[in-house]
Image (cartoon, rainbow, N blue to C red; front, top):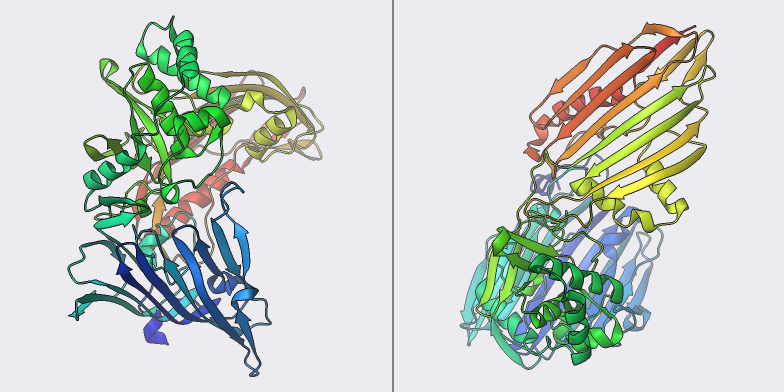
Length: 612
């Protein structure tokens, strides 16, 4: 077993939550439109945290259907129980709108430890555009002893693939068939930690697909993004016609608009006011969007449908745009794997050559300001879908130093430790995203949002004003900004000790998280963070300064922190700034990061002392 542990990401000091004793997976491409997927697995579950590795979820739709399932659960005492296909629970997974999309699910419920062994077969029909992804490790703290994936295709079938953390590919050819095999012989448990690399980097993964495919009566190629984009464009060519009544309405809305931007804004507002997002998997496995007319008639659509609808409305006004596909969780696409398995979202891009800019529109949530590249898209690789095919581009990323949250707080401190606070919270760029549509929320929702950003307990809160610049796009580099002016009361601002008051430097903003356990993974800071707090504390009458913390400045490879205190005219002014930027380093340097975080938190939790 020690040899197995040496093969993976890190060594656990305790018993793993689960052990994959074996995992054998195979896919046989029987014809361009049919195939058979078989999975055989045996999992030892040691505790409740290992249950997720033993869960079975089998997706079914017009292209895939469960053909057979059998399983057995064995306890150490020798007891065993059969699990049959009728024991699986079946759920609809398409918001109730599409009846043939379902999930067959089973979760063992036994005394620990137990071993769950199962086998199932899924039959593919109506087309095969991507082969099943091989991911034998599904959870953290799971030890994998052995696993294999076999792909059996007609000889000469051209493939694309993405492979990570598995043994070398083995290929045999006989009787007109080519068989590809990937194996994993021992893989140590992955440990989930904050600010770590993506799981794809750490666990065994094999993703494969045919270059030439037939799918639901269509044919296409996906040897590169240009080919795949050409096929995807063909699915949309008949979906972009809008009804005459809508065209008349759009012309009325834009008749006084002096330029392209104002026209796009008017149409974007129309989308905001007249549609809602619903996750729907209609047509060609969820790849073909609903028509623009269907969205107009129903008032809803998924990301594909709403992006196509917006594109159709702009096209009717002679405004060109590009539908594009993106993965919102991953900035970088898997190299060499130009297929549908890469993406989870669709959006729209409107080029503005006269302004040397592009408007990236989030049609599923048009509350996002026009012209803003939100955090799930900025810096991401995307594929523009054009008549000539797909074009791989990267959406521009904002500088790490640009986004920020600035908080200016005036504190009127009383001798009993209570205080009245007047606060102005300024959020810029990514930090403003959580406050989009903030002014439309209930007061209770607004209060919870503001309180979640504070360490301080408050009694009463009143919002004086909310201002934003969401309609202020004026060219490249536009960033959303929100100001919230509010006041609150608290009876626990300072601690009373005899004739002294112990006053916190920063009871508002939260510090940095760090783990106490030994680090297993590299440290990966995914984005920039900029906090800038100014706190002005007016001293109670009759109190003076007894002690102040020393000023502190910390400089590191991943960021900077400074804390300063100044006194003047009965007011203590505290200024604390924390700046972090994108950074990746080996786990051996995590001790440095933890030391930095400790010093930051200590400074933020420090106190100055007043004496009567």
